[in-house]
Amino acid sequence: MGETAGLFIFVHMEERSATGRIVWIDNCKAIAIGLVALGHLQTNYLVNEVIFAFVLPVFFFLSGYTFSSTATMPFGKMLQKKVRTLIVPYLGFSLILFAFWFFVRRNFGLSGHAADTSVTDALLQIFYGVNSGAFVTPLWFLTCLFVVEVLFWLLLRLGRKIVIAALVLGLFVFGLYYWTYMDIKHLPHALWNVDQACFYLYFFSAGYIVYRCNLVEKLLRSKWKSCVVVSLSAVVFALAFFARENVAVTWLFLLMQAVMCNAGLLACVALGWLIRENRAMNFVGRNSLAFFAMHMMVQSILIGVVVKVFHIDVGSLQGSLGICILLTLISLFVLAPVILFINRYAAWLVGRRRISQ
Image 1 (tube, one colour):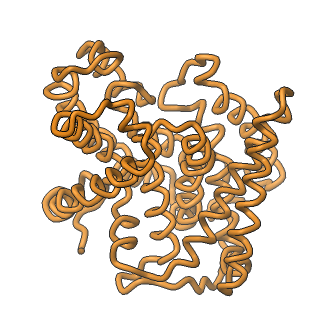
Image 2 (cartoon, rainbow, N blue to C red; image 1 turned 180 degrees about the horizontal axis):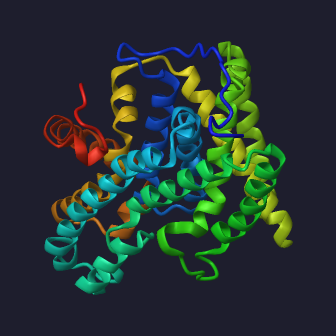
């Protein structure tokens, strides 16, 4: 593809907010971060399987969709940008969550991994940048996205589209197996989530291609088309989920898992396109990184307060979908002033110099 990484000119007609941001992207981010927060709070099997089948691919897809300008940068400039926008926030929020874990989580009646982890192990988890049960859990996304973006930038330099497509699809098949069975078979995480990067690279690449080919606008140009896409995607997702739950053949199980990922992603994009611009969705969407990083910390505090004040068993609380939805909304509301403070006085923490509200 050469040093210009395949420059083409496309006219994108997305609805933009007063700040110049693309409305449907912020809507998708807001939907996704709300679902992530809900998924991390409740323990219902069906809800968890539905949410986490597609919600994280949404973030990688949107990152790929907005990667076009970065794709043409020299490697050094691209790397510098990604360190500022991903690694610096990762380290900054890791220190915040480490302090919360050190002074609060491990000292107030917790059992299991969060309480038993040593300080040395916790610091090593930050270094490895992987998912953990102590406090790094929501932050693995940043190191994984960093690996995906650098890998994709390098793949673009191969030039031949068929080679790039073959590599992306090959890595996806491997990553799909690893992503699906890593918890069931206790597969180890690679440094900075290289294992999961193989899986998410596919969705990142899809977002990049969709942008370059202007497919979102072509497919979802009218409201009725968006409604049809949401409905059909939901039906396909449900059928694939039912089939997945009733098959014993590994390759068929993985195929249905892949169908669910793509159908859920498509439904989320179409739903984001359908929703009209509003200040709440816009705020959550443009501050999704901070919400993503800190929502589990706030949830831990809320759970502790509810259990202490109302004497509700933690298992019962997390098993109630209604209560979990309410606590999810409260956690996002509680984080809003914190995020306003960060944007005004510590915008570097979210990879920016200063953010206007």
